[in-house]
Amino acid sequence: GGAELTELIVPQVQLNDGNLIPQLGLGVWRLPPDETEQVVSEALELGYRHFDTASIYDNEAAVGRAIAASGVPREELFVTTKLWNTDQEDPHQAFEASLERLGLDYVDLYLIHWPIPHLKTAVGAWRGLVEIVGSDQCNSIGVSNFEIAHLNELITETGVVPAVDQVELHPLHQRRELRQFCAERGIAIEAWGPLSQGKSDLLERPVL
Image (cartoon, rainbow, N blue to C red; front, side, top):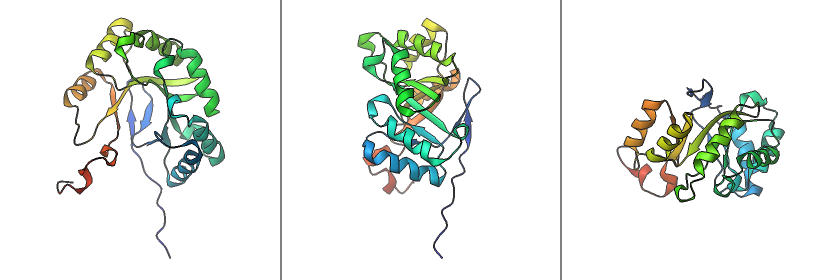
């Protein structure tokens, strides 16, 4: 007989708010909506339980459909979505729209997608996320693509430390200073592009 598909056993990481996040997740950036549902469905069958989307990806609804069709209990899943740059001044409305597209009662993690410092809207957006996480519709909040200065500003202005900073991170882009900063403050670093998006010779290197 053929090789049996083995379900993934994925370790959990504890966040600074006490919640757990599966260490391995599937990001759906650049997946067209018509392909997303099938890819997420197949990932669910393989044992993936952590899915990362964003309003700008235009595939939240497809992720939601795959989850709904899977029969996997919602409490076994970890779903992340993100606040887009042009919505930073109205995070509550953007969040509700994402929930509606996903067809979910809550998300596990909501992230500010980019700091966009020239607009100076990130701190206000973060205050909105702090209100959102106080509801039963969102378990954890964090940021994406934030550098040390951006993180310092949020923490200084609001006193609330993000649970996660999702940044590009792989062996060719190791972000040691940022990782040290986050480790000292209990911010979990989440890697996007952990295999350098196939844009390098990373996987051909003998050391790997």
